Length: 460
Image (cartoon, rainbow, N blue to C red):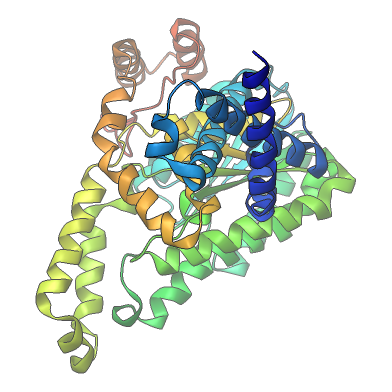
């Protein structure tokens, strides 16, 4: 027994000395730990403790079997300990936080502003928050058509108000602010949350991508978020509300072929961190939603491939000869394959956005699924290992898809009931229908998770 204790102590000491050289990695891993560990020192201690515990456990197995030393070796044990501790921390962080999100704010007298409501996340988030009881201002790039037309018919602009909005146009932002301020004053409302959702994507490598594409992506994704937040901050200061920024894993990781998009999302992530420190004095919360890929209009393969084709056709001939037509076609094929395999259940992301808006204790960062949090662990690995980790992760994608929970068939029937009421019984108010369907909806599911643009009022 004494020899086992000595082995355990010796393994722990060696683990501590090995982990000391990984201080930078462990300081970064602090962001994955639960919210209740509020200080950097507490998070660092917990992170180091988890690594030492796992490493000591591996050392404890050493006298029982020589397989550990033979297969892994000393360096391998340290790496394995770090990876396992990161995975355990991510798992506990994700699922503990899901249980931590209990209770929701009273939506009485509260309004929210959602940008990018023409389709996708913004469109469905606006409907979800409307059904929850909020007054919703839905910023739409193309008023009068598509999602904006549908939203305008929900209640005639009484509690769900589409607002023309191009986040790259300061004049439109000023006009939207005036609309929100006037409506809030007339109805004794307070602006509770600004949800920065508007965004665009572009797929192309550096030499095949024009500077105009970089400017457009940064102007919408980054500067658009800055413009909106700067303009609406006075209203949020009065309500001590919150800013919700819909970002992406591209704000944590680097994806080749997505340079412009990754730049914009990394900039937004840093903006959120700085903003959080600046507005804490006014009790304003800032939450970032790190989404994985979902099948929305922004990731429409046909649209994106057409844009990539246009960029290739305008690329100088000498650059095209360097890359070659075969390389470009293979690049397009690989991204089409990825885009067609992304998750179609955008209700998963909408649930997360709504939780960030409604939660009594909002987090600083949300992941829309556990897979996203696992993928983000790559940022803590040495640069040469990140590509290996991401490659392994991609190879396990079919397993993650198999583990992904199936859509609840009850939701489809509820949507059919909602649409039948809206199409066939105009005398029944949308408020009554939404309230009735919400009472039928099992906890955790969304009654609007599969409503698409234009579908809600396509009849009559």
